[in-house]
Length: 259
View 1 (tube, rainbow, N blue to C red):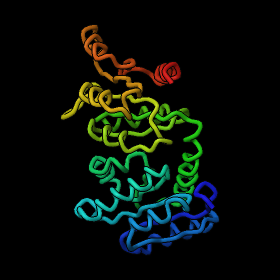
View 2 (view 1 turned 45 degrees about the vertical axis):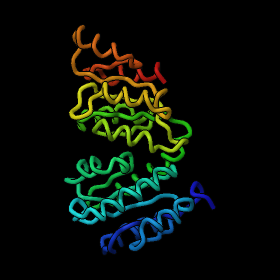
View 3 (view 1 turned 45 degrees about the horizontal axis):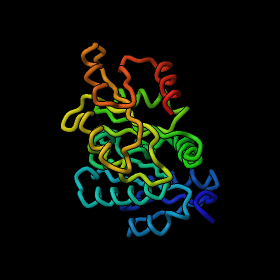
View 4 (view 1 turned 120 degrees about the vertical axis):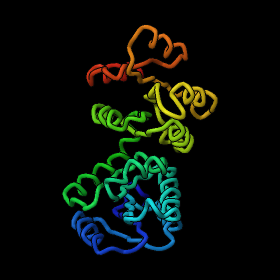
């Protein structure tokens, strides 16, 4: 049985927690079989990645302070993402954005805050499983913006029509794109023009120098709509630009013309 036909969900964690019993019980009610792994997590991910329907990673409260555990999460995220599989990560809400910034390999996976809402868990499981099927039918868009609030708003606007991933820094975008498996390639990038450290123009230049990314359409996002600002943006020869004041309907109409 392949992963597409599987009813098995794998829960990864560093130490068993009684809280996970509630998750196991809920998954059993949904008629999934559950395997919980607390040792040799990376090896288990490699062994089960072609068999499981879905992975879950229950993070400890000290994940931000423990480099070894963060490295395990990084490598497991790479294993699962590179196989085209899906994962739900459970963690503290206050650490979510910082954790994704440190481990961009985990960007795009499902996230649930603790304590876990079991009704929300059921919906999340169905959504993540459906995303594997959507990979065949929906185009994929990567939003690169250091303003997570704006990026999340745009994702909500377009997620019914596209698969959407978010990263919040230029180098995260490069790392993300170079590690995406062939069957999960990004079809279009919405790229913030002004970002700290590595800005949009620098990201575009790096993308055009890599064979794996040089043909991906790049649309600049800019908050300044003056003639001079737009001229400066377009001089870099992106595939277009969008003002951050653009409405939901206008963005959707624009994207349909591009992909």
